[in-house]
Amino acid sequence: MNELRSDPLTGRTVLYASGRAGRPNDFAPAALDAGGGSPPADCPFCAGHESLTPPALAERVGPDGRWRQRVVPNKYPICGRREDDVCLGSHEVVIESPRHVTNTTELGQDGLAGVLGVYAERLAHWRADGRFPFRMAFKNVGPSAGASLTHLHSQIVALPMLSTQQEIEAALLASQDSPADAWRAWRERELADPARLLAEDAGLVAFCPTVSRASGEFWVVPRHGGPFFEDALPDASASDRMAALLFPLVARLEQRILPAGYNLIVSTAPTTGVLADAFCWRLEVVPRVASLAGFELGAGMFINTLPPDEAAALLRG
Ligand SMILES: [Zn+2]
Image (cartoon, rainbow, N blue to C red; front, side, top):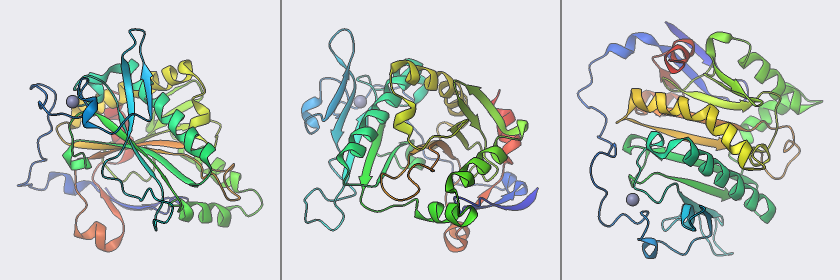
C-alpha cells in the first residue's frame, strides 16, 4: 500500500508505505527498563524520596493516607516562571505511582484512572488561572518517546501561545458559520468506518485515525463532541470509565511494542478565542517504533508502514 493522506483539521500528512516495514534495521530501539530489575536507588519519584523533588503542588491520597499520584514542578521546565520571562508558563510532572512502575500495564487500571483524574484536575486548575490559553497533558514512555526517567510520569504544560492555531484556522475555513460543524463532520467521517473502531463506552470512542502518524496510533474522542477534556472527567466514576476503555488498549499496545516506547497526548480546548467551545478534545496514543528521519523533517510529513484498519485489528486483539 502506497497512499498519501491528509487530515483537513490537524493539517498532518502521512505517506502510507507498507513496503518499508520489512527494510533492514541495524539499530534496535533502546532498551526500556520493563520493570523487571530493582529501581535505581536514587529515583526521585519513588515513595520515600519526596525530598528529592520540589514540594508537591497537588496529591491524590489513598485510604491509608499515603499518596497515589503526586504533582510537582518540573525541575527542568520548558518555560519561564517569572512574570518577565519571554515564555512565562507552567510545566509540571505527574508522578503516577509511589511504586517504581515503568509502564501502564504495571500501573493497572485503577492507577490509570487516578492519573486521568489528575490530568483533569490540573488542566482545570490552569483553565481557572486564566493566563495561559494553551494547556496539554502528555507522557513519554520509553527512551524512544523522550522519557529521561523510567519511573512512570506525565507532564502538564500551560503556555501563552496556541499550538492548535493551524487546526483552529482550518476549522474556520472549513465552516465559516459554525466552526463546531467542522469538528462534527470530522468525527462523523472518522467514526464511520467500523474497521478502524477499537472500543466504545460511556460516550467515548477509541479508534485508529485515517491519518495515523505511526503504526498502531489510536485516539479516544467523545462520541458527541465536547471542547474540554477536564469537563469529561467531573468525578472518579468518569475517570474509572475512561480508564476501563483505555487500559486494555494501552496494555495490548505495550505487549506488542515495548521496549520501544510511545507518547500519550491529551489535547483540550484553548481557554480563549472564538473556537474554544467548538474544539473537540482528544487523547492520542502514538507508538514510537520508528524515529523521525530526514524525509519526515525535510518534507514535513510522516511515513507509516501500517494502515490504520490493520493496526485496529491488532489492537482489538
Ligand atoms: Zn522510582
